[in-house]
Image (cartoon, rainbow, N blue to C red; front, side, top):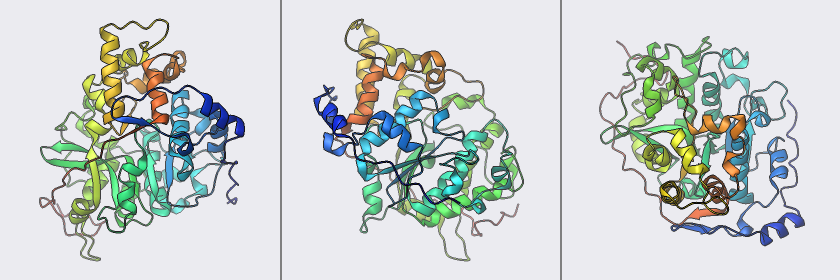
Length: 423
C-alpha cells in the first residue's frame, strides 16, 4: 500500500480571493445568511476537483466521506459540482474524501480500509444485481466512520446548512449524550428508523462497528442481496412496511421482497437496535433512544420531493424556470418555484437527490444525469443556479430540533449481535 499522497495546497490563490471578493453575491432568502468569504474555501472549482482526485491525509475526525464506485471523473457533472460546493461551504475546517473501488486508483477504498472489512464479492469485484453500486457504498460507509470518524454523505446530498449544526457539535461535546446524528423516517406512527445517506459519528463508535458486522455477515459468499430477508440474521424481521409518512414513494413500485433486498443495510440497523447482547452488555434499544440525534427526513432531506409528489419532472420544470434576467416571467410557475426553492433552502438541512428504481425513471437525479441536461443545475438566471449558488454561500439561521425517540420494548432479542433468532 502506497503512503498517502501529499494534498494539493489548500490555500486559494490571491487571484481567487480577489475574484471572490469582487464577485456580485446573491441575496439569501429569509431565514438564511451569507457565509462570510473568510469561512469559505475560495479555491477555484478546478483546483478543488483536482484535489478531490488526489488522496489526502486524514488529519482529524472532521472528514466528509463519499463514494462513487467508478471514481470522481465518472460522476455526472452536477454531482461533481455538488461535492465541490461541499468543499467551498465547509471551508478548511473539514476534509472531503471521495473514494472509489477502481483497481490501482489513487483514491481506492483499500488505501483507507483493509480488505478484511469486506465480503468476498466486494474484494473480488464480483458484486452483481440491480443495486450493486448502492450496496458497495453500504459496505464502505461504516468502516470509514468507525476507523476515522466524520460524516458519511451520499453524493446526491445538497447542503443548505453547515454540518457542524447538523448534530456534529453535540457529538463533539463531552457533556452531550449524543454520539450519532442523522435523519429518520417514520415507519409507523411514532416509530422511526434511521436512514443511511447521512451518518455522523466519532471514530470507534460501538454501534457503527456492530452494524457493519451484521451487514457483512449477510453477504457471506453471495454476490448480490437477493433473499437477504431470509438470512438467519434477518428472517425474524418483518418485510419493510408501507412507510407512514410517504417515504420513498417511487420505490413502492417494488415488491416487498425487492424492497427488502434494496434496504438490507437498514434492515441490519433495525436488527441491531432491538438487540441486548448478554455477552458484553451492549443494549441496542437504549443506545438508539439515548445517543442518536435524529431529525425528520421528510422535512430535512425530501421536502421538495414530497411537495411535488416525488415527480422529478415537476422539480426539473421548477428549477429550470428563469428566476431573473432575460426570459424571466413572473407567472404561476415562477411564483411556485420562488416559494418552494426559498422555503427548501431555509428550512431543509439538505436536499437528497436519488435515482429511480423499479422502473421509476422521472427522478430529478436521472433527468440531470442526461447529457442534454448536464449543465441544468447552473444555467444562468434559473432557480437551479440560484439553489446551487446558495448551497455554497448561504447558511440557515434556525435551530435544528431532534425527534424524541422512544425506548423500543417490543421484539427485543437477548442474543449475540451475530446470533440467529430461534424460529
